[in-house]
Length: 110
Image (cartoon, rainbow, N blue to C red):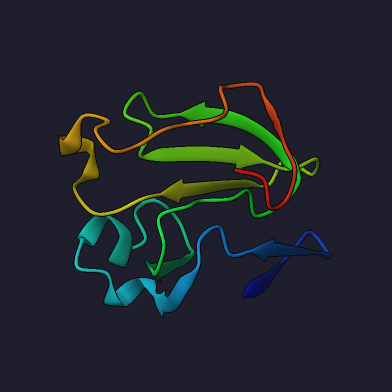
């Protein structure tokens, strides 16, 4: 599953970072996302628990609890991958990061 968006006359294809059903943000039961306070995007109802890099880039932010990560591509397009609702309350339990801030990622990599 992929979705595309135009940025500065260049097309950026972003692969889905997790397998599941694509839903619009307005269907997410959290106003931070449904009202696009974190920006435009989509939500995915996951069918498995593995997150992969949606494009080649680097990690520019990793939440201490490993429930969210921000990746940036070579054109400085930044993508937030946030897992779950209220997952910050889990204090990292159940989340493992294989990357750290500054690490390079390749599309499809954990």
